[in-house]
Length: 224
Length: 204
Length: 178
Image (cartoon, rainbow over all chains, first blue to last red; front, side, top):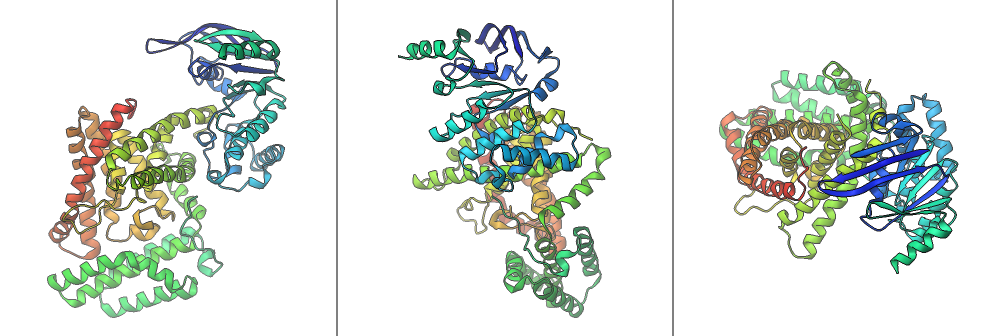
């Protein structure tokens, strides 16, 4: 559960997010908005990568300001560009990297890695160079690298923007099937139809909030 | 993908531990400094060349590849030594240089990247009192190996763009975008490292 | 080291390796090839601070030593550390550090960056390079120094180029070096 209370973020003299209060408890939550609406900033608040200038963000009652490390151990984060998220030369090594803080034995670690690879159908890529993967494969590896740590919450910042339609649908289906709470920032609204709740961010405020069946049509109307 | 200089094989030299090979290299270096007559040096060079090509099975082509970068230096030695001293001295310097470079290349060609890295990490471990963490060094090595092909691609793209515009020498115009791209990538990468638990790693 | 330090060190080691791929910079009237690789040493010193720049070069040298062919012309391995140019390589690490120190002392105009590059990227590198070359080739120090002078015009051009690039990059990306 994530709780934002009167959160504002400013950059120089520009207000990015303006007095947002919201409680995120549903299993699958989508966040949509135009470029520059502040939705990426919103995502970064949820695991303490960014701290609010005003207000508080609490994850399972931990304040991101005081307990950033503990918050990040519970909140996984999937970035838009997997090239910047995969930091080890090969796929299996990259998955193992996320387990470093868990202090597992070598056998436990390789077991967790192989189970996770298997779950995302990546076993055949285990020893491949990350640089030589396709865009879709890279995003799956990045997702597996987050999920291997078994986070309670997964935040995704435009996870499908750099993918073609087929890979985008595949990645979103896998994200939607995850048992943990997922919060997906995206402008591909068609992937959010099965979600439990959709927030619309415009000009740094939450302009709409509700089930996707109601909010998405209203959002698409504002684009017309 | 970046490929190391290691040549796979299962000769006695391949099986020797990296630390032993490194110590042997220093040993050869010490011997070379002590020997200062042409004939024993020439015998040593022939011996190392034999170990290189036959015992380690690296062949003559690789021996030539290891020697080629030295040719320019050998020419310089030949010219200056004849001018400064005498032929005998020139031969000594040339033989000593060839012996040392062949030995070093022999170690590199017969030692896996990971084995060599382990030795270096162990050496870094002795610097622990100075705040060096072998774990962090190993991570830096892996991260750089991951980033090299990506940065290569960036530089190549810019070089090709230059060429297609006929600007073979527009270094200034080309490098500013490369550098800003690299610095921007640094921001995103460090954010991703933190999201993936970098600040929860034990530095011990 | 913070995450940002770690990433910058790795990126500038990778960048300097990548610059070895570029064709040599042609310099009028100079017969020796001028590789773009030492540009990486100077750019690191100008852009990411003394400690990170020095570490980036040390890291690159470590990768070369363990057997990656990352020097211009695809050279690498232990052989380059026992050859005549070994001292210049060691000079890269110290030189990048010194450039960073000089840059931190002065404001970053193109003139002061050029001077920093000349001090760290040329003088310091030569101070390490020339004696080692003289020792390996068994030459008098003065002869080795005179021989190295052939590289001076190319290195001066690179010092100017690196200064100009760094000034432009700092303007486009003011966070550099922090």
